Length: 158
Picture 1 (cartoon, rainbow, N blue to C red):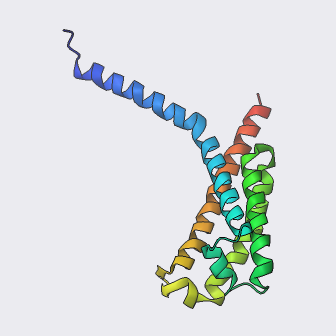
Picture 2 (picture 1 turned 180 degrees about the vertical axis):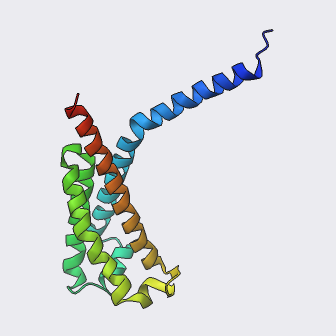
Picture 3 (picture 1 turned 60 degrees about the horizontal axis):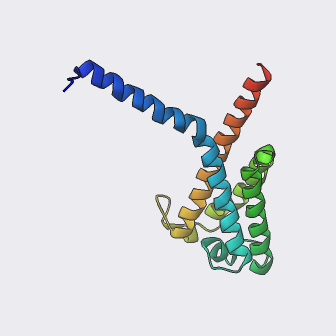
């Protein structure tokens, strides 16, 4: 039976670690982008099929237009964001669509803090948590777009 020194064991562990994280590096951002896109399509379709979601609850309380108008618009808007995330050449449009959507949604924190918070400003209600999630998703989209931009720049210089 062959015995390995601790140095050999650590080298093998390091090699395995490099392989695993190499896979993450090669595929992680693409999987993140596609999964985010699928999430937007899914949540958008929920609105279009009339399912009750946090957005539909918010649509009854914070938007200036009737929920019957707002929910389909938000639903199609989210489907469009999802498609533009999934189909890489349209990624720039995804960020634009999100930048238009998120500030409008964030206005709820200012116009209806009593709906967005259980205890202002540190304990968000479920609706407030949903809005915070939207902000985090926007930043995830920005990170993905930044990576795609740097990849495109690297390809142009080679």
